Image 1 (cartoon, one colour):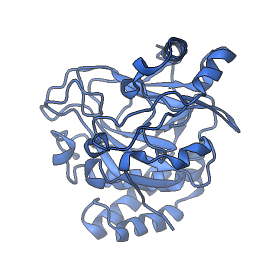
Image 2 (image 1 turned 60 degrees about the vertical axis):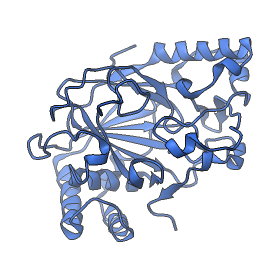
Image 3 (image 1 turned 90 degrees about the vertical axis):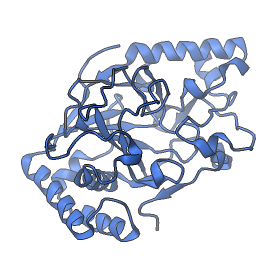
Image 4 (image 1 turned 180 degrees about the vertical axis):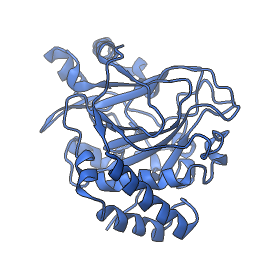
Length: 330
């Protein structure tokens, strides 16, 4: 795995101040970052008024890296209070940053929330939680969080994933690998483009894991109009059901993604933006202290209206009964 630098887009001081002012004004008006139709409407109106320098830095991902780090925002380590002990107790911790994330997401597309995850909030708190250390979810710590497509089990998954850093005293890295940088032969590409295996819901979706419908087989790779894309979550893919040839091709893809993977250690205020159709992401293991100083990220998911990067057959999938709510659906 490389530690090479990710592409950086820098917000100037005036743009950063503009975003903080807009978010603080909304928080003052509503007194909470918990999303309501009224708050989301205010976010949409404020996002529409943001200046061109901000919009330029939030243009679509435009390199084969499939990601960028937005730099220039500030986080007050004392002012945000201790790292929450889990998402369920986070409440309005770092509330103004929730709204900053919503503003950024709204410029880039349409933020989405999952009814079955973190009480349907549009911005998630990603913190280590006692008892979850070994899971393949954002609440884990002791284990490597395997590289994966965010919400890979669902046809309505985000096009863009945003990870905003609130606290990272231990310089814990997010890992990322772009399908556009791997080297696979045509035979492996063809094998992995066939819908041979399902991707099952991860442990964060309790209701989805109990869904009784037949899991649909989905392709791992897809040749979209602008290049190769992927849908990948080995921790929740039953590879034992595949043919030996398919398993071998899948393992070669895993090895290639590991080869091109980069480690991105976010600093407070930085926001990692990942193209969820090009890049798989994960996290290195760390030892959580549960003393209020652990790593703390804000996560937002974004759909890009009109984007055509996925197989048409996905439209027929049941999504394991999970529904996503769009913040600004017409």
